[in-house]
Image (cartoon, rainbow, N blue to C red):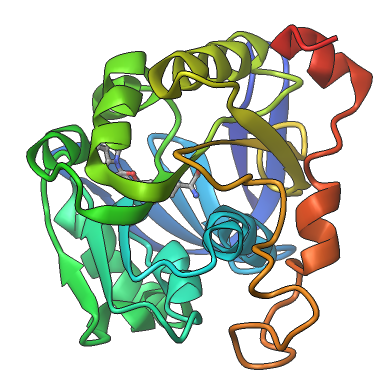
Length: 284
Ligand code: SAM
């Protein structure tokens, strides 16, 4: 008998794939968690029925979430990842040789535990001596650490349950306060096809919190709803859409050929938005 997993992405659309094995399934204090072995996409982490990552395409998401702000910043030393318990974003941040400290504010320790077991290629970096695990609500963590971080990366679940506040203006205001001068905030902000209201609201809340227009950029992620994903960036100074002058024309700040999606060219191109996205952001 064939086993299929379907993520219901809207009331009328689902994404399905064949499952060869269920490796883990449990209810944590915060969410339903499953790890599936799938035929087309390798291992898959699912929280509350929603795909968080697959080993086939996670590189696009994690590279674009981490390297865009880190390269635009140019000299980040201290990073905060909110959510991101699978370790993929931390792994990417650690590729930057100048990073001294990465704090992971993840609400659910069981996501980290399960990722260490089933996704060692993502979670391996969590044992790096530069990484601190701060289990708890990212909203509270950010409020308690003003002026501490060069870059804040919001690697959250969809806006349900405890993640709802991670898309709101008071959280973005606290993120601005948590940043040092020259700091950059980036958040994953869902699909511009299926979550238009959320993309618009996050952009305008982040713009209001930082007192200047936030910048949205896009990347293709086949296993996320609609396949087209948005990220939204705001900064206290640097232009998030441009690699820092420090890097242009020089050697990239990571091992050559270690990245599969991000490049300086992709970085800049990702901020060129199709007219329908500009329209939904009100910038056209
Ligand atoms: N790449 C993923 C995506 O966009 O689908 C996100 C992956 S990561 C597993 C998301 C993490 O955010 C989850 O482990 C969840 O426990 C965590 N999370 C949700 N709300 C949170 C909050 N308020 N504070 C800290 N972590 C939170």
